Length: 344
Image 1 (cartoon, one colour):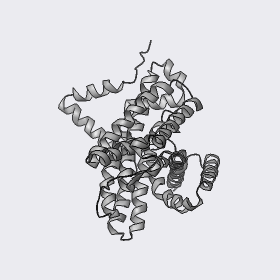
Image 2: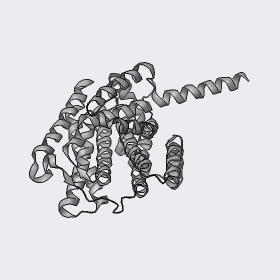
Image 3: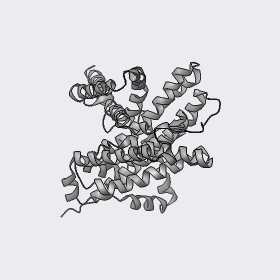
Image 4: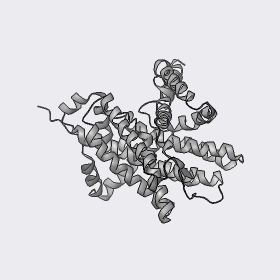
């Protein structure tokens, strides 16, 4: 009888890497380098960084920074939605929790912004861990709706806890860069986006990522093959929420103000659209969508709640006519090029 090899648990993979011989470690580093360069993300960031260096218009630089942060959010969102098939409708609230944790620490105690972002990451990750334990035993829309309820509860707390959060009045957050130069903000936020990509890409390209894919495609079959489903689901959800908290903290210092509206479901919809426009499960597509779709989001802001209807219509059109998003489009173009090359 053929022995079935079970995917490694996260702690097993870490232990194997740490205890490996130097040659094995070098092999792992070579694998990591190939995994990181196998995606278009480094090249997308290279292009946008070049633009940030040459563009002088502050509004265009503002769009680049916003696209950078929302693109990172879409990558972290797609880490859960695209791999374990769990759509976190409370995602904006986890970003808001990271933002509020970082912003309030700086507002009340003068905590360094970078330490504030770290605290926001930890806070969102802890809440994500317990939310995952409660919700991820459910399936489909049940898990999505329960995560949405958690997001609504967070938004309600931020609204009514006036003594701390100042409620709807909002909190002024000390800015990260006093000059307000958007180019400086771009290069300050760039390492956070790179960190998000490195974490997500290395996990998804490892045996853990294979387990995620198996769970997302067929949970029953994954369970039958010996995969400890709950462990992987909670691990994935926790990492996704922690990254959301980190990005939310960065946004707080970029925007300079916090109010409960940042946790609204409409912001989750914006991130969801970016992930689906980029191509579900692609990771890199969300970043590309961030840079290409953010100008549209900015243009639609004066429409207020009407833009939510437009987002919904856009999502329906995407699901019907372009289910693969940018990833499907690029794959289709490459397949045509290869076919013509073979014919020649």
